[in-house]
Image 1 (tube, one colour):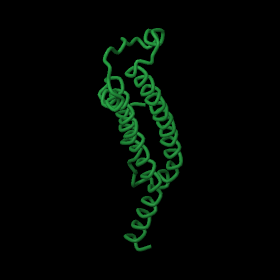
Image 2: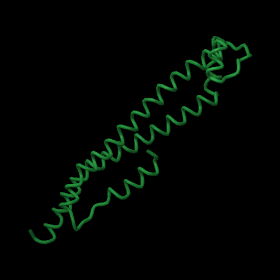
Image 3: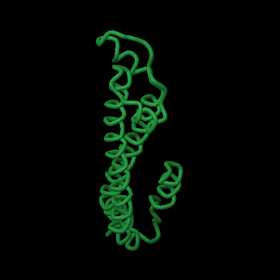
Image 4: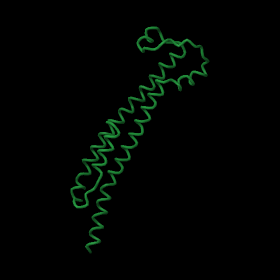
Amino acid sequence: MKLEDIKTAVENDIEIDRTELDQEALKTPQLHNKYLNILNDEKLLQFKYENDLNQLRKYKWLHYTGKLSEEQLKELDWEPFELSILKQDIDKFMSADDDIIELKSKLEFQRRKVDYLESIIKMINNRQWLIREAIDWIKFTNGV
């Protein structure tokens, strides 16, 4: 799910109608379930990106050390790496590799999305407390 779609949904869902506090309290479990499902899907995608990055690093290491076969190079659609580099310099090449940078960026964005969703879940968990406090305030101002 796109981050902008999540933000829009949160803006619509998180507002509490002060005139319908009872209905708002009843919506909380549904909201929690909705965002927990989204969070689980996004965590699975994050896990996939982490695994993809590990695999890509392995193949890039093999590529930079010259250990990929011609068949593997064709399968990956990569050109043979012609330079001879020291083992200690392989990390420098890998950290500057465009494919690795792109996947690391996707993974970092995914982590930020998961963090955002976790904060939304915490806010939804606090929603019941906020509703109870609003009801107590109404009782207090009405002299009950």
